[in-house]
Image (tube, rainbow, N blue to C red; front, side):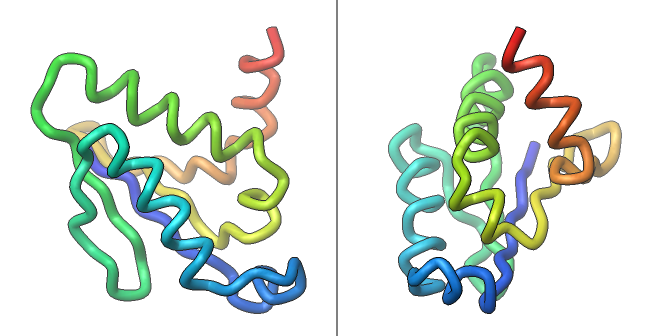
Length: 102
């Protein structure tokens, strides 16, 4: 399992943030759970550690990001990738938020 993020530099700057600060915030969230950053070249990518609870923990991080206004304003992409293919998480944000609210 992998999750990849990219950010809209103009949107980041409109909020008064620096792109590196935004990227570091996301990296810190994943690092706190021991998920390795496997790409830091334009697109941030993190992968699972091969543990049974990785799926749940990774989605918990993603859902916490989706609940935050700064992330929704700044994210250009958030793509989940697993053995079943890729899923555009941002395209499903409203559906995900509805489930989270229940």
